[in-house]
Length: 138
Image 1 (tube, rainbow, N blue to C red):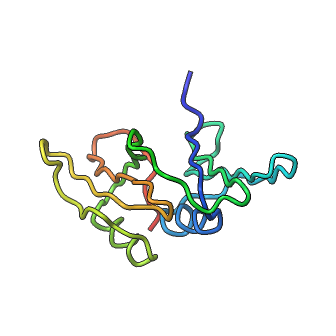
Image 2: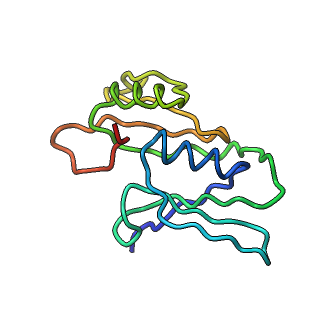
């Protein structure tokens, strides 16, 4: 078994695609409209769905706002150079809500960015000995 995708409901699909693709460097893997259900699905990620976990962005036609639940935490992305990744994200118009630095109760270096709907994305500095994980394209 493996995790295939995580679904996020988005209020503005084009803004979300711009954030995840242009700011975080993911690729649009597939997109399909479902007229009878009045929704569009767009799948984005750092690699093919057959080998990588991806995000499913769900746009329900006519819905322009969602209330984020207080049980939701964040999406985590491993990066090789967290300081460079945050700089790139800011240059591309992304919003860094927590600058890179060690966790409050640990030594792992993390940062947080926010997508157009307010979803949090945690960036985690990968050590040079850790497994390969996609990073924000620079």
